[in-house]
Image 1 (tube, rainbow, N blue to C red):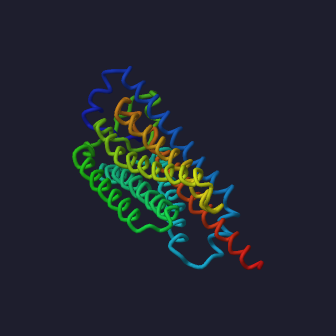
Image 2 (image 1 turned 45 degrees about the vertical axis):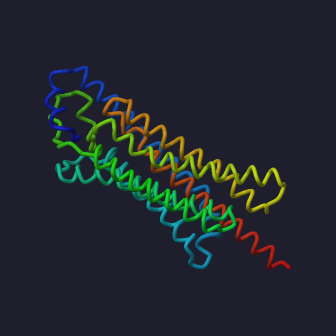
Image 3 (image 1 turned 90 degrees about the vertical axis):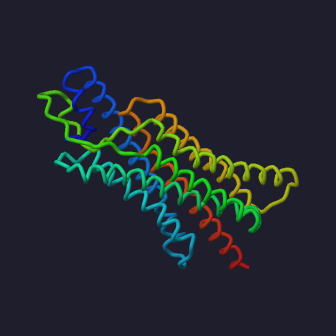
Length: 290
């Protein structure tokens, strides 16, 4: 069963073309959700051996806990979402559906914020633990976090939802999940995170230019800069596409990129930490060898 806004349900029975459009949009959205989960699971499988060696066999540390949170909170959240949106065909109450729609937004925000913390740590590390740089990027992060909350307050209202009545043999009867189309202005809530990514990427690019110009810096520093620029770009593109889709696409296509808003930041954030922990382990082994 699918739950939709009451006002939308009233219009659907009289307009077969609208129903067909909704079916196509929701089907595409569900395929996208499943693809994003497959992408995340694939990354978990191919990096599991590296994770075991460099994370689970290391002493407890902030990096280790941050890695576990980013990697597994994203996986659990995305699995829950796919289960409800794709596999769950039972009857869901309005209250449960509304809670779930809010949970999607909150969990994406938590994942994005967690990855931002990882990227801030990266910037702090490549600038030789400069406190002024740290205070500056943290202040920027907090400002953009507050801005995101304000934008949510103005654009994130979830409409009342109700169950879609049976339409006989129409394919809509096979669609399950909770979908509550919101205003397209909700896409603006992605803008602060995009700006933060761009600014942090510029910090990295500047440090990369200084390193190249002076031909100095350790191998670890160069790896940090290279990986950070690559991952900043990937996360920025994902957030930007979600922003544009939410603003410009029809209501029932606005969630098509949400699964990737889980998968890409989780993958890139955990990989950033994993590469740091792996390189640190190698440096430690090299030191012990002497």
